[in-house]
Length: 395
Image (cartoon, rainbow, N blue to C red; front, side, top):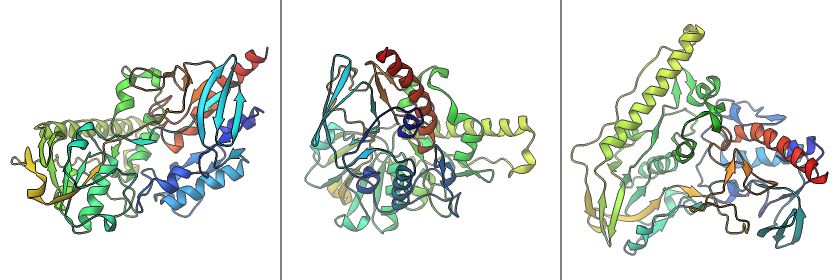
């Protein structure tokens, strides 16, 4: 957004509570890599140019990439500046920080969708054992001896389950709704297919239920040098025990939903529909000879005897990790733009308050809005809208 505003001659400042790429430096576990291939890290006028376009950046590499971009575009960043309160007075916004107060006609909220880990209320009823969020987890070495239960089977949950199981610990994974995809299909990264077929460019106003699309779980993907696929079959073969969604906690006694087979069958069905759409696109283009032949993957295997309840102590669980999603933090926003669930009201990134904009939310303007690759197109649209708004306000 800063790049597009600079290109339009819009005077602006970027406030960051830490350094550039702060959350990538401070809120990620040690082994994490981007889920998107390096070639897909594309920002306006700044694309990946390294030797491994099909690889996946480590967190230090992501930090270096974003810092280099900020320097390239000479973004007017005020680091170590924490926003305490934003309010609206007349035609302007008042932005109170720990380093003074700013006044502006327009405001962009680019603080992301993953500021606060979502931990269900039933977590408070657990016995006295180690309980962590993904922001607090760094590596298996930090965990106490004993088994680990991971609640949630989207990208974070499956990656942590694989890593912790590989360290030699017993791991139990609680599975609810999830999105299963192969890392590579017909010789290309699944993200390549979604990009090439235009799936990532689908707009928010082109689908029937954008609210549901914005709530979909993250893809079960992992970035590795080998471009390996991670799914529940892989985890089960590695010795991870699968149970259904955690629904009740009574001290050490836990109960799980019986919907595990249905959740897995639905994820398999949606994956196969996506692969079929890719095959249809290839056929329509007449380019089948350029790619590997089509294939389908084994259905998710669910044991008929998967447990519906057990005692944590009896099975040796000493750590619970809540991979149950994240939410934005708008505690500093004193403008009436939140709905009854605390979500920011906007239309394709144009906020409900005049001159307010938002960046980086899931399916905000396009399916790719929450990806690095989606920021440029969204920012171009919103910067154009803002320029028009500012011109009218000045008139």
